[in-house]
Image (tube, rainbow, N blue to C red; front, side):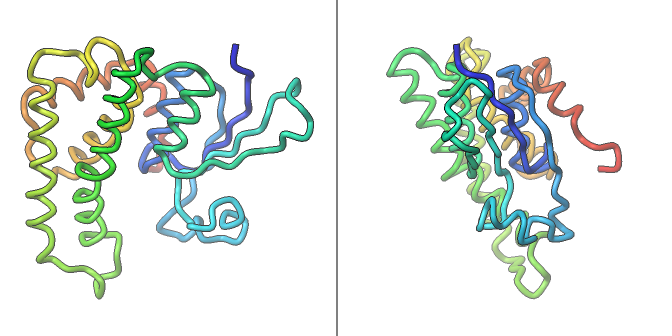
Length: 220
C-alpha cells in the first residue's frame, strides 16, 4: 500500500489547482487548500516564491508520513501535469495498467497541454489577465480557430460512445482534459459537440468531482 502523506495545495478549483483537487478526491486523500488570491498578487509574496519561484499555482506541498525516513523531508511539486502523474504513481491509481493505454493517456494529456489549453489561455490573457496595454484583440479569432479544432478532435474520439477518453475506465486524461473543457465552457469559448457536452455531464456526476467543486469558497 502507498504510504499516506499530508498534502497542502496552493490553488483552487477556479484555476489549474482544480485538477489537483479533483485528483486528490478521486484518490481519497486528505489535503488542505491555501487559496491564493491571484489578482491581489498573493502568488508573488516572498513566502510563496520560496515554494515556487515562478509565482504560479498550483503548487503541492507533500509532507511524508511519520513512518517514512526522517531525512526524506517535505517535497514541493509544481506544474499540474507533473503533480497529477506523481500522485497517480504514488497511489497506484488513475493510470491504465497496459503500456499501450498508458501511452494513449500520455498522448492525450500532451495534446491538451500543447493544442487544447494554449489557445484558451492565450484568449484569457488577452481578455482579462494582462493589463490593457499588453492585450492584442486581433489574436482572439486565431485562438478560437485553434481551440475549436482541438474540440473537434476530442469530439471525434468520443463519438464511438465511450464513457471516458480511454474507454470505460476513468483516468488522469479525463481530469486534465475534462477540467480544461469545463474552463472553456465557463468562458463560453468555442462550440462543444454533443459528445463532448455529454462527456462533461458524466464527469460532473462523479462524486469526487462534486466533492472537489464543493471546496469553492462562497465569496467566489
